[in-house]
Image (cartoon, rainbow, N blue to C red; front, top):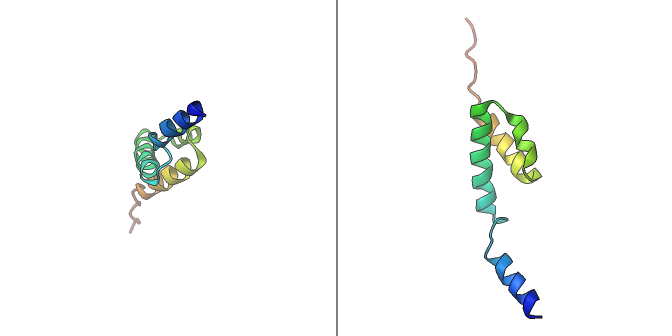
Length: 68
């Protein structure tokens, strides 16, 4: 019983699944992937982080000016 309580306490101290942590990780990884031009590297992250990171990378696209 003590061991189970100890594990639960340790898990509560590790907020990896907190929304703000996932969002921050997605922003940083999306920026890194865009700067390195390596969006495929995002596949190694959990699906929700990878999806957010891809949206971040897409938002960083510089639109090309129309030729006149």
